[in-house]
Image (cartoon, rainbow, N blue to C red; front, side, top):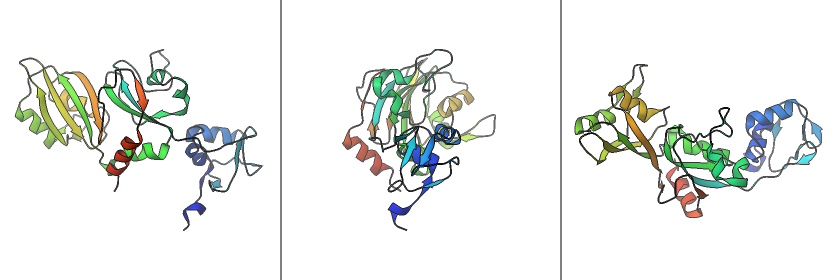
Length: 245
């Protein structure tokens, strides 16, 4: 099949154009605010050819937005939602006027810090997060305990949680050790909810800080905490190459 003739659902098409999320697009469609080639459509699954069809919302034509990619150094205590009912600061505060155009690629929980990607390219974001790409993510973790080779070995071999999950690190090494505190580097190639914290909790070890330092070949570098910058073309190509299946 010719790539130009492939069709996607109307809600997905609006998301791919960078207008809004697929769920928001579905709301607009059902509300009768969206037309396809001049005709009102109420089904989010109405087939669309993005190369040929015209989509309008409230009478205004949608065009593909420029693809935006940002690197952000998330601070501890900041949340990764667009808004927060408790009034907490969100990661969007560091993006200024670009904030409404992009979304986080995955999440770091409120207590975690470090490298976070932001983009309006939903397909690219999905590839970054997809388990089958096995894109390594590296973290520096400060724990309130001495760590030895036995603990590192357990992290890599796998730890069974109380819920029955088996959580594993791809690699683990001591960055800096002490009698009461240790910095450990953990590399993951899967994204399980609170995976690192849950592994250490199961070992009875408290996590004091958790900082993501790398996603594939992309490193946090010296980007100041709470700041953001555009992803460079070289970094984008390197990430794309790392995700090739």
